[in-house]
Length: 269
Image (cartoon, rainbow, N blue to C red; front, side):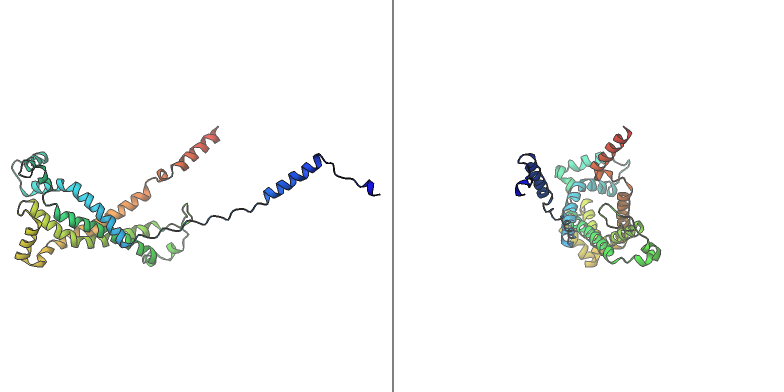
């Protein structure tokens, strides 16, 4: 009979159905799409590398030039007994220009060394990126090294073999050293002639060299500069990169070190 059909109670049963409906609705919400990884930063152009290196070269030259003036004065005007650096500094400051005498001859290195630093770091960075893209050292490394799986870093990219990475740094540093020597050699030639008192202005020193030895007189000492800068620059960047890989890098991720320390304390408790 129709009257015998059981009807759901109006109290708790309806509430349970509403709760289930609310739970189903809450669990059926669409999950947000996964975030795409941030786009990789574009490699700086050669103009950016040169500009950054030039700015660093200006800062270095302005801060280091007074000490270089003192060094040149001690080397070119020896006395017996030899004077100390403080005595040479006091003598320069007592001159007609006062303390500004320490910056005598600043114009030539300010231009030359800023260009030199820009060329150096631009050549190093661009050369290393080219070597990383083209892998010219793969054949020299051998098939075994190329087929061996390299460990992965925190972002999942495979690390380059250490020897290949250091070889790329050395080659890029040597390239930078060979190019900057073409700027450093004439700059040093003019700077030293001004610092030792032969000339007061860079223009006069350049005119004297060109008059006596021609335009190629500005290249005197290039071979010795190349012999100094090419291996020195290669060694500088190679040792810097090796030290970066050898020293502990936990300082770059202090929260990871703190988390690890907390977990170890919790485990000990």
